[in-house]
Image 1 (cartoon, rainbow, N blue to C red):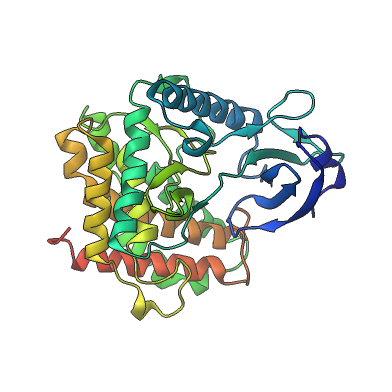
Image 2 (image 1 turned 135 degrees about the vertical axis):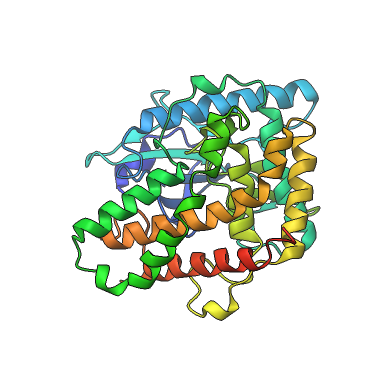
Length: 351
């Protein structure tokens, strides 16, 4: 529940008109704030997921300042092309309420949309282009200077190790319900190190990556449906840029929702996949290496596998990380990712 003192700590222009729950994110609680002089997004941090909000906000401040400066120098409007933080009355980037909960605020970007699902191949191209352009614009940013907000976020072998640990401890007495799912992930174990091995061999560079490249984190212009900017920068840190491509494909090039119960409807749309790929390569321009391009389909499949592993791990641990609407929600999500990975396997030659 929103603390009455949280909103009062931010520099909100004009008089408050309304404040209501907003969105369906898995991690933070969000509120749509309207004043007489604008619209804003207030968010309460999930400090279980992000125990060091000061490091998260430091990354976001530096990335958004850097991107805004690029916009100004190129004649673009930074208020539409970059997220804009609203400071507290004391000039800080976040506030704490009397319970110790952490809040931050952004300005809403007007006349835009962030679709839950692409409505066309053109939407897929635009979203792919947005994530690729993010890579291109940050190509000279000092990647190693960023804080690691979640260690090993996309290190798939360690995600798998966490799943095995959760299964061994079985703290919620749920392992007996998930033997087929565990067997599937065990059978895929040989694939989990593909990107890590390529990096160790010097073939896969670290770049500034978004790391949560879901379709609904891409803002499009409401009139033209052209890309504007990316949302949810909490996990921007060093990583493999092709994981952003893989996450966009996992969430946007699939025929069913992330928590679909009817697994027979879960398939990869190859036309959407191709549009994402064309858009991503267009946005990246010429910065990708040959090996990064070769590994694009591997990254897509690994993101399905990795997220399935994460959902199943959270289910076994008692649903501490992802928000759930019912007791089996994370298990349903894991099964959907298994079905998607299977679909990718069947379409591998096309990929």
